[in-house]
Structures are given as C-alpha cells and as structure tokens.
Image (cartoon, rainbow, N blue to C red; front, top):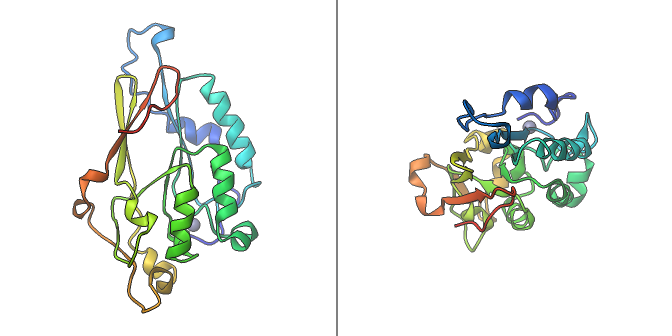
Length: 220
Ligand SMILES: [Zn+2]
C-alpha cells in the first residue's frame, strides 16, 4: 500500500515462506518418494526494488532450490510490483513485467499502485505478463476492450491429488488511496469498479494442473 517500504520486500524468504508451506498432501504414512510438499512463494510491495535484499535474482535461485526439494512450487506476487522507482517510471511498468516474466511468476494480484499508469497501460501490461493476474472483485466498465475485463476470479490448481484455490482480491480503497483519475476515461467516467466477488461471472474461473514433472498442463 505504501509508496516505499524498508528492506523487507522479499520478506526473509527462508523463514516466512517456509511458514507458508502448505503441506496439504496427507503425508502421514507416506514414503519419502510419495511426499510432495506444496510450497507457495510470494512477494508483496516490491515497488521496483529488483535488487533489494535477495532481489529477484535471489528469489529465482531460491525457487530453483525449492523446486529441487518438491515438485509443487508456485510463485505469486501480491501487488504493487510495477510502480515505485525509476525502472517503473521510465517504462510505465513494462520493464518490471519483463523482469517478472523472467523470474517466472505463476499468479499475481493488482495492488493499488498497479493502476498508476492508467487503465490503457494497465491493459497493455496485463497482456504482456506471463503470470496469470487474478481479480474476483474488479469489473471493467470502460469503453472498448481491455485485458482488465479478462481478469480471472480465481484459479484452481491441482497438485497431485490436492486442489488449492488461488483467489485474486484487490482492495476497493485503491481508487481513493491512489488518484481517482487513474481509473477514469477521458470523460471522467470510471473505467472499472470494485464489486462484491459474487457479482463477477464464475465463467472466468479456470483450472491448472501440475503434472508429476511439475509442468503445467493446458488450462481448462
Ligand atoms: Zn505498496
């Protein structure tokens, strides 16, 4: 939510991310080969700080190391990755999308500052992102087409026999915590609104399956 935060963007991965490890696979009684921990790595409020702390390079290395321990590793960004420093400003967020594509994020959520480059640029950024952005409480109300209208509510991921739902929720306060003009078209009409999740069509849900080799099968 803040424009800048101190050196905790990558959040002491060794401790906190392990705290987020969801061992949901019914491990009791399984052999070592059968144990497949589900590991969810996340970043939050990176704000273009690509080299702070362990940085994206360290995160990439950590992810690879974790993938050597378990098949099921998923990387998520929880928002405010694209704005906050020079890299974001000079590229309108595009350089950060490039970096995140290289890191290999699986899912991402729109933070309040993801809207700072305007709705048209946000649509362009979403189209180039290889991470699947999720947003169950965002409804596009603007004219014409926009990748914002194609945000998925959530995605079900199957890790072997275990299913995990990744749900995208963005704070409705984004409109007032940022600048309302970022959300408006040239006529001053809001191009998107925040809604109750139930108002969004469930047809945008999707499903991803991790195979035993850890690769994603085509989304259904
Ligand atoms: Zn922030």
